[in-house]
Amino acid sequence: MSHRAGAPLAFTALPEEILLHTLTYVSESLEDTLAVSITCKKLNRIMRPLLYGTVLISPRKASSELGPVDAQATMDSLLSQVNLIAPYIQHFGLCKAEPALDLSREISRERVTEDLMLILAKIPPGQLRSLRWDGNFSYPESIAEHLQTYQKNLETLIIDLWCNTSYQDPKKVKFSLDIFAFRNVRHLCLYSSSMPFSNVQWLLANISKLLINLKTLAVMRSNRGYHLWTSTQPTDEGIYSRSRTSFEIIYPFLETLACDDDDFGSQLPHHLGLESISQFPNLRSLYSRLCLSSRWLSNFDPKVPILLTTLEVQDCIMTVLSKFLLAFQGLVNLDIAVSPGEDYLDDAPILHHAATLKRLVLWKTGRFGRSNQGLMPIPLPLMRSLGKGLERLQEFCALIPQATWTARSGFYPKASLDPTNKTND
Image (cartoon, rainbow, N blue to C red; front, side):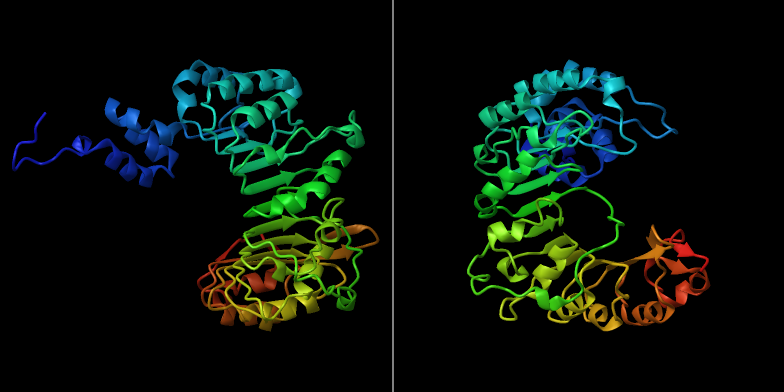
């Protein structure tokens, strides 16, 4: 149909490439995307890549307000539309959420694997860009083999290396994932609450090859929360001395690093010669727990610019952290969990980043009695000083004493404070 001169041009009359590009601006909101897609058949067809580009199945129960979710009904619904959806899927997998669904009762693990394989088989070879497997059961070898054969263009792998130690021996669990089969992998996240021994050994033997091209590496025992156990790490920063060759090993592409001091993390520095944050010259985000925090932050090279915008550390030696924070500026997000044997950090290192800092989290674990541990409230003078100096702060998370809570608005006029983070002490 030709366009009559002077008449307004209908939105749907624009070229489809322009329509798709324009509609991507509403794709971050699922409700908006669905609302636009049902306005007419043409827009519904054009928006299919936005509607079906990401398929993450949540094997969980919904909140009590929404009622229980039938996991098998959800899977059956996907399978009934697989021929329509599969040509557009680029991001696929299981996404664990709380409260977790007991798959052994609601739906068998074998059935989940079979159904997912039916969907994967319909996705055109080489189309998949990311896989997430976070469903509280082992990563099936059949799916691993399929991906390694037909989806070699994967760029992101997020996998929970789960093994049920009640009936599986972690030392005998096979690591079925061959990461080197994927030519373009740049983001690797491996989580586990009980990482099998074979997984640890494989990672230690191959991690140096993986790090050459990775932009993101996360290897942690848990993908959320803090560990509130008593730290046994030394508090003397003098034990963390770097070797002569520590700066000769550089990983130039890594931008995000997250690592625990667990069975894998404790051996990581030895196998890779990792002793300093300066070995990651383009690092923007660091999430580190326990001894690794002190080791990497104590041995920085002042000649290498520090580009961090996000730093999350737990049980780092406070003198090490203080010197590190004063060595550069530019942090936007700062998350510190202080060990029971240390005091809260002074205000100066934090205020050194006042021009950019938007989110601040300060926790300190303390002992109550012989064995109990919990969070200790932030001292009033520290809270007052930070409130005066952090004018750009938008979010502040800490355990606030009740007496301080009543005057919170005067301390942090622009920050969002959580009223549940307070104590009667």
